[in-house]
Length: 119
Length: 107
Image 1 (tube, rainbow over the protein chains, first blue to last red):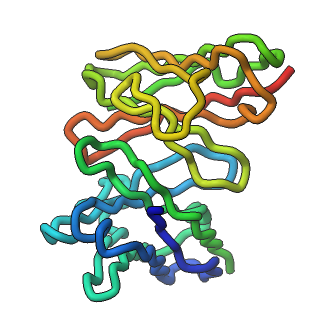
Image 2 (spheres, each protein chain N blue to C red):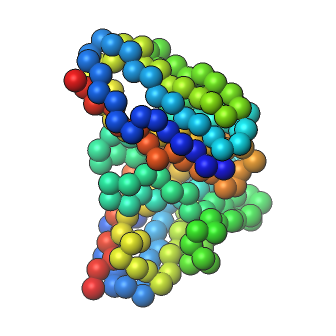
Image 3 (cartoon, chains in turn brown, green):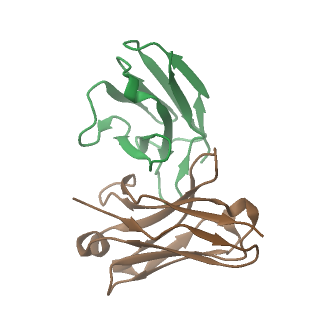
């Protein structure tokens, strides 16, 4: 059974940073792309970034003006998404997901991490 | 690529058919997926490659279309199908883009 297990909820101040983790199996980490999607309260899904650990390739959405960084720790099969310069509008649930190897859809998802930005 | 879904909300009686539409601003071939999301849960993959059901998805869910026009059909709506449905394109990813979602309500 494929699992992606995310870190717990966070409360952050405006201007600070948050780093969310997503732990999975070695099989997933060594052969798939991991991607990050967020969902603001009552809103839709927004793609943020991705990393392919086996190739050390990452990219992110231009919508975040360089505030998002996606990294991977191969020793622990854990992907990370860091968002800097937090604003109230960054309050959202952040999901990691696995990209199907022979396609581009997201076949397994983490449980989500709520990040609340408030002064 | 901008994805546009319609309707925003659909109210359907149990046992009836529900039809959701998704339009891409340019061709995505068959690189289109549908997800179901219930409150407080992560999205769940229903359909990929335009028309292939994911593992464990009931046969009442079907997808069709290619290019710029796609449809998700629930042939006989069940109470547990009340959810928000998103389409997603993955033509030449990254990036990926989602539609804004269609909410299915049970009448």
